[in-house]
Image 1 (spheres, rainbow over the protein chains, first blue to last red):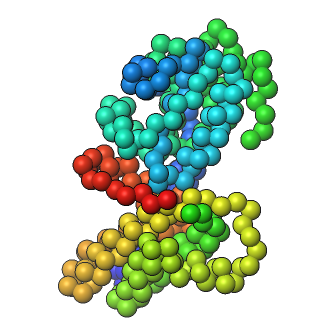
Image 2: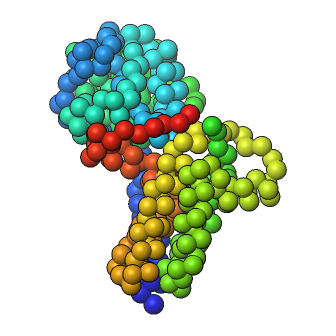
Image 3: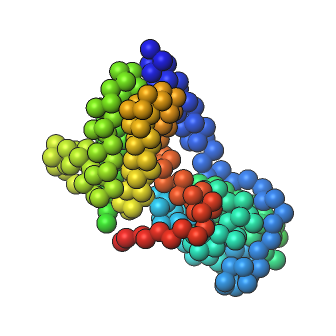
Length: 148
Length: 137
């Protein structure tokens, strides 16, 4: 009898987690004051912004996220996409409090983390986040974000 | 190595059904069957995937990397073995918690397409940075 209740409670919990996850996954939040340098990244910062993606080998949505960010960096001049293997940079993972892959950071030209998204972000959301990272020149206004 | 995502979802649904039935009936045998299925999944031989391929002949619209779900099968195996130990040793809380954890992950995958097992990977690496893992292509 206990087993039945455990099964029902587990399914209810899983459904709750799943619904919350569907809503929150990939949502872009404000950064929490961290900063990354070119030395941290192992490559130069973008002139206008840098999209940093943390990935692992065992990550399903990392590939799709890579495509989204590569598209955006092709579309918007001065924006660089840097992908970091989380496993080989556990120092950065800990410093930035990264719990999941993919996690995407949007850096301003000085390397400050302006926006952060855990999970696969939508292209339109990345473009909006970029506009916030580069307040003077709005990349989303000169280029229509196309459908994914 | 590529995997058919439909087959993975199907496998997760069968796994959920078996684990839920295990909890309700307390059947050690059923959990043992699931443990074997997890173990076969780790070595690319998931019986549920094979069943799906035998029934559904059409090609998938897209495929995905087979390594994350394979890793998750390994995580599932750990919980199934924990559950088996609990049932066999009569440690009911261990049996229920371990089986429920596996059910939680399987159901999330079946119903929402989220791979909880895959996401534990980075957390495990954060805790055990010294552990070296072979990633076979």
